[in-house]
Length: 342
Figure 1 (cartoon, rainbow, N blue to C red):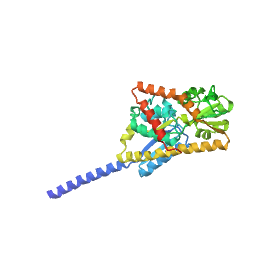
Figure 2 (figure 1 turned 60 degrees about the vertical axis):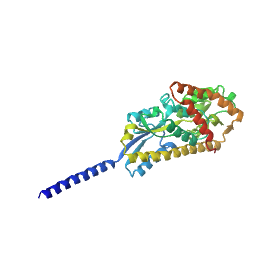
Figure 3 (figure 1 turned 30 degrees about the vertical axis):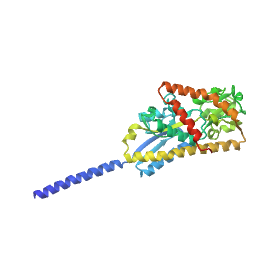
């Protein structure tokens, strides 16, 4: 009799352990719902790439992860996106480091006019150097990956071949590009991309510094007459994809691995998307019969010298903060030189 009781008790204990295990497994299998704030509109190629990333994570996790995108800054504005991820307004966020100047004193160097040839190169460099330097400025989030657009060029209402042609030219530019416009001899005028078409049309500005994809995406190619291929001083805008740190740490290890694996593959996807957008932009302005002006080797050197002070200013500011700005810019230059030519 006593033996039967002991067996019954043992069975109950083992059954309880099995049920407890089942309960834990069931909890792990509960759908993880995440919000993703993006400033791009839903139709933009980068927002489409982000949706595909979210879909791939859902697929690889067997539906255990569901990510809902909030495009066009509907959950948090572009300049508030990073802070929104830190505070938990969104679980994931995509925006530009440059939109909160001073917040990323080392990674600001990624945007410098160092002559990025294309978006793929800029994107690869941004990811490799973020991984190499592991900057403390990102310690309050989980960095998933970075991407960056192709070289900013000068599009204008009249041909620009030399620095003399830039003198006094009213150029739409913001942030870093404002400094570039001023160093070239132009007069920077700050405004959003949404305002630029009308400003060019009415002559409020006579030129714009932008990646060429903007000329099609925002139809600005309609209101300019020429494009100066100034990629020798091509700047970029590096964009982060980050997750709330507490949310990241709460994910099961196998889910974290899925995020890491998919994100590493999407670095290429975003770089390809930027290059495709630029190719479409060049095709668009050719279709409009706009002049495309290539700088001579001598002119290229003149333009590089004109913006060198921006690079040195960054290095000095970073050094004062104990940051390896000089090393970062040297790495970028070396990696650009080693990038495969197209």
